[in-house]
Image (cartoon, rainbow, N blue to C red; front, side):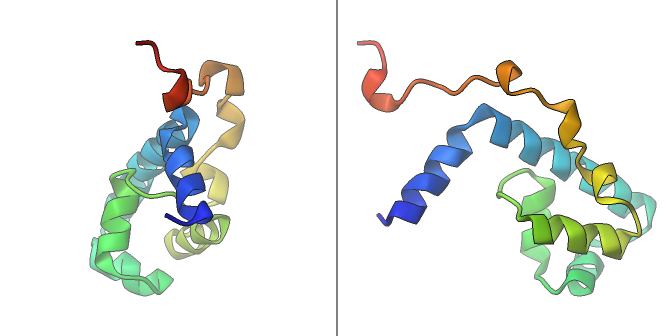
Length: 104
């Protein structure tokens, strides 16, 4: 497994990453459907494929800042309407202990 893959795997275990992904996905679904757009149409608007939009809405993938900007432009909303980072505090989402520190 490459170092990048290990880092991505660790990031996916981070409860804050999980919360952000889920909240972005829910908000993306809400805005997309309120605009009457299908996942396929939105995917075409941002230059990706339908499964990527589905995975984003399901909170299953990490999102790049450039993705948030593309989505916001396509949906004609401010990026903060898709994900309000100020609403999250690190202390509310402590990192889990590494697997090698798990209790026996």
